[in-house]
Image (cartoon, rainbow, N blue to C red; front, side, top):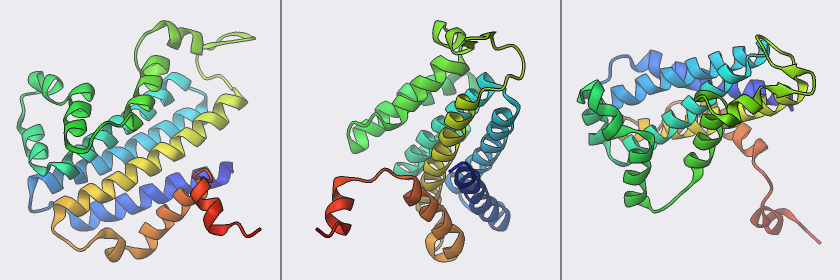
Length: 220
């Protein structure tokens, strides 16, 4: 499974990289903002993966939180492309209030109803690594003592590698939807069938089996 998670993360990066390098500067501000956030997904996935492989757990957790925040912002831009233009033009000092995580969550809930999908991950990662907190200090304790500097931890390596792959895939799929909604081009599933299908295939492989799956494929 570890190799699958690595390949799934790489496939997401390959898809986004191909899109942003071949489309260049897009004609609309919303599409350009989506493209720029796509580059951020690649950088966070790469940085998070490097931190995981080196045993810097708090740094890896920050990358995971950033992926989640980027994914929610992309969902906002998919639903309301004008928000991308507003976001790009808002004064940095005012942007946090207008586009902070909780504010974006509220705007999305007004549009599509309540969902805790992004919030649950954001809260976990914020407490464990992105902000100084009692949880983050406890997170750096092991039976051998405090984690100081790069520290090997097999269980954490497995858990965070899976988390990185899962969050990268979810955020990449949201990037695809946001790009399709703002670019005015043919859907990426048509333009880049193989890369898109690869990401979707990895996502399906890592999804838990549901009752509907059982009813569809189970033959008594």
